[in-house]
Amino acid sequence: MTDTPELLRPHAEQVYAEELARLAAVDDRPRPPSWLLSPWAVVTYLMGGTLADKTVISPKYVGSSRLMEVAVATLATDRALLLLGVPGTAKSWVSEHLAAAISGDSTLLVQGTAGTAEEALRYGWNYARLLAEGPSEAALVPSPVMVAMRTGAIARIEEVTRVPADVADGLITVLSEKTLPVPELGTEIQARRGFNVIATANDRDRGVNDMSSALRRRFNTVVLPLPATVREEVEIVTRRVADLGKALDLPAPGDAVDEIRRVVTIFRELRSGSTDDGRTAVKVPSGTLSTAEAISVVTGGLALAAHFGDGRLRAGDVAAGIVGSVVKDPVADRAVWNEYLETVVRHRDGWKDFYRAARDAG
Ligand SMILES: Nc1ncnc2c1ncn2[C@@H]1O[C@H](COP(=O)(O)OP(=O)(O)OP(=O)(O)O)[C@@H](O)[C@H]1O
Ligand SMILES: [Mg+2]
Image (tube, rainbow, N blue to C red; front, side):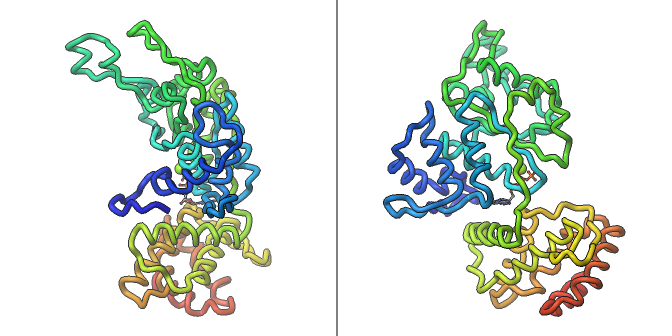
């Protein structure tokens, strides 16, 4: 990892500049137009591996490499990529790393909201100049999508299903004709080869069905699943917590893996409605208990352990965070949590400390 100590959150292409440079150096496979790496090297960047020159590439995405291959192959075609999934399944994370690896720039980003206007996807105007000089190339303010078209780069659209459908439909021409008309100037922007779009959508918010079918057909959809096993999810949390801890200057935790496994187990059981061994049904709370929440519970716990404990992550450091994530609705979720504590946690071997800490925290 490259050191960018003064920045709170450097972009992927900054953090992993060295890995990307090493990959580009050894990559002798064909690269699509404007791509900095071949599709093979992009997938290696995402999944991790060891290069012929012994450089170790860290895994960014933990999960099926086939999914990443399909995503990368899609971007090499003329179809756009839609990453779909429940909250916290790394949609934004994968989209950032794909843009970083393919274009060296993950910042051509539009955040979709109910208030996203057409200008955010197409272009706007510098009104002072527009009034003084009339419409001109210099008065035009390009959107990230327009910049990506001009440079042959990847544009990212986050939470595309939150964008009002008529605004989102402005993308249809861009994606099918690869052109963006600017009638005020009597011109158009024609996309350079290499241009493409990665959109993300959360299927908890509003369905993809709210997208017009004309727009949906321009995308290949890749569904990112929840981590398949406890082991996989523990690995994700451990990796991300270590990265975040470094960025926040938290001391490296002593052995935190047992505590991380406990957090992950609790989240998975409450998410799925049954204990890990499948024997006991448990009620499901209203909030989302995604991997992302597990990462923040553990990071918060490490901060407690570092500043107010002996640096070792213990049950008491994660208990309050877990209760806070689970109990979103003070009445219904509280009952769900208490039932889980009394029927599952209380009787589990080696969980006495956590049971006590959780009761104190609640
Ligand atoms: N399979 C995974 N591999 C690596 N990291 C993961 C994985 N799943 C989740 N994460 C981590 O979880 C965190 C949340 O991911 P991210 O914000 O990308 O989720 P999202 O799918 O965009 O969620 P939302 O729908 O809420 O926007 C990131 O720090 C990411 O690294
Ligand atoms: Mg996201």
